[in-house]
Figure 1 (cartoon, rainbow, N blue to C red):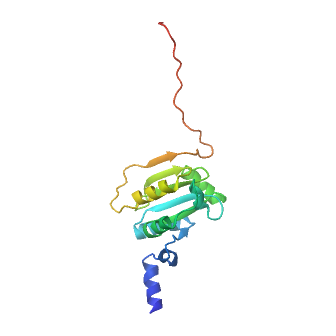
Figure 2 (figure 1 turned 135 degrees about the vertical axis):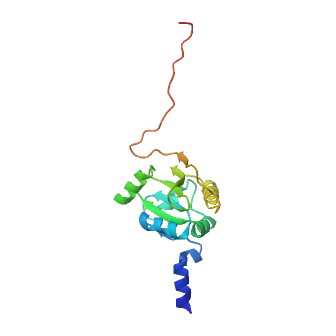
Figure 3 (figure 1 turned 180 degrees about the vertical axis):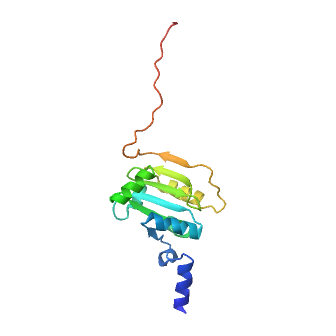
Length: 167
């Protein structure tokens, strides 16, 4: 009986963490992308550093339990650790600084949201809720740059000098 339930849970993508309201954190992008294709869920890529670095994306504390439940139920979660060589390379490909959040569409082929930097707990909740909607059709990427990635200089508006009088 228990073996059959375990087989069904594994086949459907449910993990013990999902049942407890905790997301299963993937650390392999290729495997996470395969899960996105199999489960038809968007991928939430948290970029941070060190153990539990996904929480460093928040400006104001730890991720709330209800957000963990939303992540577990609606997303394939990937953690990119910028303390590793592979993590640095993936963060650079996503054009994210030391921390950030990327959300894909349900096929994993398009970015729906890209943040380089941190966000508040309320912004995280609103963003995840918005991009978890099953009927959301991704046409463009919402891009927010609060921290410039390494080697990328922020763009500034051109500077003009105004002269008085006529020429």
